[in-house]
Length: 422
Image 1: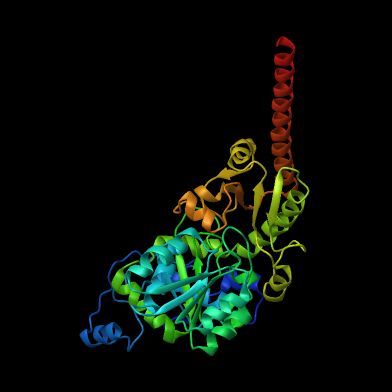
Image 2: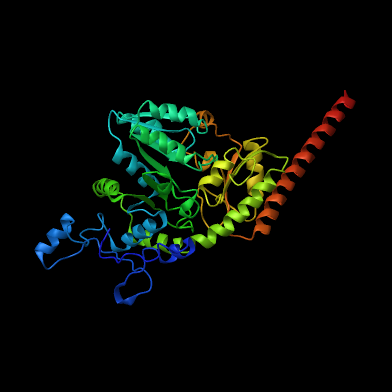
């Protein structure tokens, strides 16, 4: 990042203010009030010695946009503000950020401990790519904290956490697992995408590195890809070096869109998670729903832990339907205010089964091994009116039940007719 930027003065402000002003209390060129999109690939210097000092990092400035870019730098500063981090590094996608940070801190002969419940792409890194590098991977039952602690105690270099998990919404006890990791000198990485910086700050709970898929709630409009990694400058300098050499840098236009999206994060999330709570409570009463996953429900297994480390419960719900995929295929097309798509965190509500969203990379057998039911549906609640979303969900379930009852009635009549005919 470019140190020529003035220190932000929004640190003591509330989150609703910091999402707007964080990283942007600077003098933009031409006195612009919005962060300019700087599309130059390279930056020229008349003074060769100054150019050399900037290239070596002795002086602030920009050399080449794969390494750093003025627009991207503003985004990185904004995430530092929101996560109370010393430094941040932006990537081209969320998976580029996750894979980049894992490859930065793991090498042949080392060991990483994580959980079975994680985003499908992350799981693929653990199951397929890291073992190719000679990294030992141990995945534990997500809510068996003692088992995770036992594996950590056996020795590990990196502990990777995702909380709440995607798509089962399990919540890990960050403080307890960080303490176990520190006893063996392990680096702790946490994916904070679902919670967002507004609901949870893992660095404040002892985590070393925080990862975000900026594609999701940070951008909030489903129109851009990006990822951000936050932590100390000592650690981020290593992540930045990996990104510079491997090339998964964020482009300036995408950075601008994410910056713009973050400014409304507090407003969006306030409405989204208020609606999520209402929908989750309704789903608990729906006969066609086997189970509901939402940390805001008092009966949620991790509700107490979530309350202790989160300021809000987020805008993602998942639920398992009676009848599995057959009911999924009947229900989702009936929804009026919903995209059926593989994304989350947008202003529109999005529904999708795990097999085509979070775990599309996994086979049926792999999903079953991970405890991902074919009847599981993930809902990313949007900013629509709560009453409309609730009515929409109710009418869809009513239609499904009506058609099922009609089919059962028809089947009964057919059976009786057959018996009479015999």
